[in-house]
Image 1 (cartoon, rainbow, N blue to C red):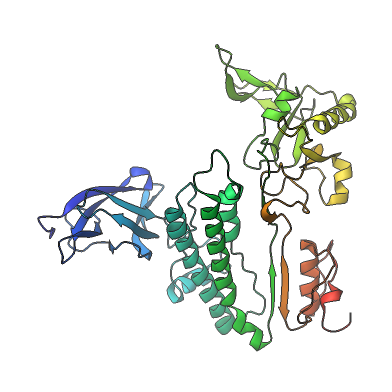
Image 2: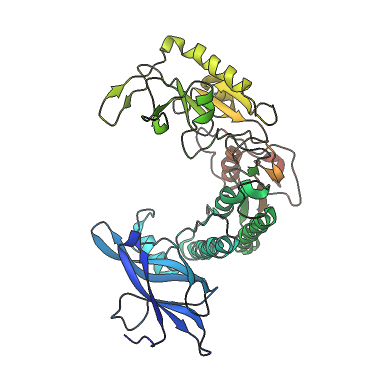
Length: 444
């Protein structure tokens, strides 16, 4: 309604295009286009938000369609670039977060108190691809917001609610690593240089360091801080063979070995559908291979037809042996070396903390240098650019020795018993881990 005559207009689409916002590209006092204003519609007098290049704007209030309802919601935004003649802009917006999303809180009233005292819960940033600017400003900007919100919330709960134990999960390093870790070694499909990716990893670790630093004041008040990770990540030395990928069904290796079969179209091209009448086994996620066993594995086709498995239960043991032997014999065509480090039966995997009714009939691990990034390999795996799958563990504060490094192999399952002991409560029932007595200040 009050737009200058020289303003340029465009429409921004949100919520899969169901929400449309009128936007103006505006000039500064020098007559150069350098910022934008976003309006609910053309009749609006005041903008929802005004964005300037490089300024990451948090908690922009707008709307989102939830089912049949339109509800208020917040998202973060950043204007990355504006052409001086107003013919081009680059803008990023996170997903939206509804202010009534209270079902992750107990008691639920706590959610609304935190929104009032700290601010709306930020949405997670997730930008991948081959542009350092997008990742550095958008992805890290969202996680900086997350760091501030979590830290402010935790301090508020400690100071006002008497909270004595806090678990915080800050996922920025993991999410960044999954996007770019494989590019730390130059490859034909690398969108950027290894140096650019190395810079981004440095930036994300510095961000995590800033987050951890927000809690160092607790050490002066008698707190104990445990810094742990569930895993590391590696950059593979060789081209991955797409076995051990946790994001879908791993087809090609088992297809080459004759254990997985895809359906074909009329021209003989692969369809995205497994032919269960010809498939002996599938590898649907990292580390696990399931046999297509009669009486156990039934498959309903799109037309409603139900197909039973094809492996006779009496032949299951021998078929497992056949598959494991084939895996060990599978070699990389460039190096001539094996790509599988270990393949064992479900019952044997119990020794590694795996196995059981939900795990595969065969558990396998990729050989060092051929893994995707983590999970599909043993935890001792090393990778390119000094990367490693091994997790980290740093314990500081009341109860622990200072400036001490242990040679003990620390596992995730050791953390809960140790913290329980320091807190003066019994170990969790059925705990598999053990107290890290070597690290304790007082003799155990």
